[in-house]
Image (cartoon, rainbow, N blue to C red; front, side):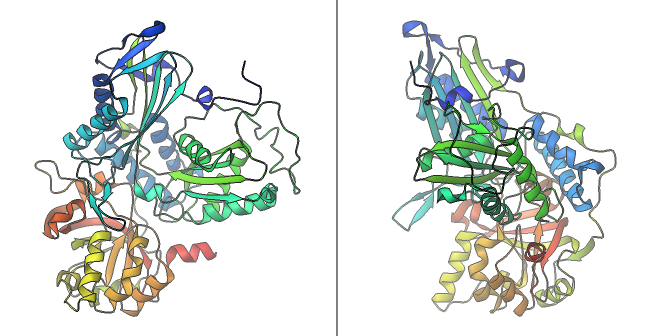
Length: 555
């Protein structure tokens, strides 16, 4: 019999009731050795293909409902929060038609699994799941974002979005449980991890530490977020593994001290005592979750355009630890929360039912962007920079006209041109630069899902470009570094942010045309000439170099 201090994490996983699943018409498991089940590789491949196809276009009822809750006047959200939430719901409704993915960053294909001891695989389970993911990404025109190393510093796109990350572990029982998810780079980049001293086990110290991380989240990961925090862990990798499961809601059933009883971490100002439960089982602390939500509201970032709705909810998980070590992991899932659970048992193959009609959550009267001014992006870029620069950080605009897309790989090419003494492409002087890498367009559409990438990744290029009259006006998501804001202002330019996580909506309503004009070999990172119509955006860096997000951070 296992000692009381040991536990199996798989025993605490939350997969809900079978009422929330659909039975799939797939080859069912056969009777295996010892009375268990034998799962064919072909079944896993087909299940993975269906799951990764579904999560690219649909989200769970609970997630859609939580976004819709921001529209309630009593939610505490601002007018800007309600506008962004409404845009995200409209985006979900368009994506649910099954043509334009929820987000242009269709993410890394990830599958977490727990195989019962009396279950077995007929064939290579990991390869089967990866093959199913590749089929989904190819058939549904999902973006291929995986870069494989060609050398220690060299890399190239794998062009099939593989390798997938497949993590299957042993558990009790005779069934297979899986959770399929696709996590984009913007939200993954918000993961923070450190090995702390046990001295942070003090309410004031720990609260300050987590508040600092929450304050640094910003909007580039596409809020509103679910924020997760994991304190403890027998090893660093356990803390990060549990962080991933917490974000997926797989540990929601954990028990632990709640707001009524208190954990001792928030209720006192001194160190936590060494006493503890007899069992080493992990706990979920709802008092800390409430505190994290309040930290998020106080950032002022809101659901991207300012306000109180940075986070939809939070998860706080406490684990055991070595006496000399204390892992602290924090992370988010974004507004495009893509995941689906699956169960393979004697009864068949079941996949979590996702929300097929998000449009039913939309209000009869759609919120408008407060005091938005229409701006044409065409014409002389210095004059456009002057017009936008004369507006103040935080002002809203509806932008129309021609932009060129460019992301990390293309900016590295621009830097190479400068270093070799060659001229920059003329389009950088003629048009604003939109940091974007859209999905492949379905037949008959002007564009695939089209959304902004993180502005900060291009910050190091801004001085060399703006000082040469290039990229005077840039469009992306999130804030910019102080140096980048100064370079933009010094050149007489401006930086605008648009809504991250609304890529299907942008493609449907705001992209008039799109064509590749340079670096076609870079695939989704190629330079495109795109014509926009009335795309909502916010002035983030104005003509004086003031940054909207930096300003609210200081306040």
